[in-house]
Image (cartoon, rainbow, N blue to C red; front, side, top):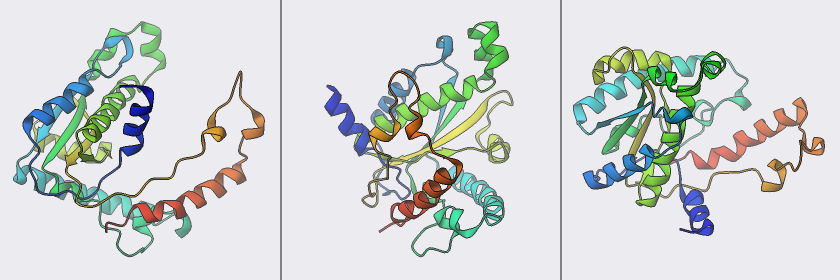
Length: 238
């Protein structure tokens, strides 16, 4: 693969929120996780483990837990001014609840064993409290790219501490093991739209930070408001 082929893959990756019921072959699931196995990690600690869920009954229990967490999230989100809320909390038509993963044939839970942080040097242990989380994020990104390479859709669902407490008993995970992300995988049930990205020239700085590109607090707030408007077309499922 050359760089242009890789860029094509990166641009083709989409967050998918609705899936067909078609099963995903186990061979593809293992290849996707094999890609994640080669993610980078601090001191090669490899904290990740993966729980693959295909049982509909288990998915229903997980969806019920997620629904409870969503109600809490909605209550908090509604305290923001309307224009800063996520699109699904702004009464915009055709934006579904965030439970489309229930339809996904496969859920991959990205877990981490925090004891692996001992692989690194002591000063990193003292300074980098979130090292295991960062390493696991690397593996999650690899899952998404591998799924796109297989012609599959995927979604990144962050598992909050509140939700983690509810789903650990469902998955039978030991107390020490962290459950950090959930990646629903399947064949997309619709064609996702292209997501907005900032221009390359806006984010590159050569030989130090270019202060002409620095955004004031007011400019950043304007950007976030604009981002909310740009995000609206991406959420509806059509």
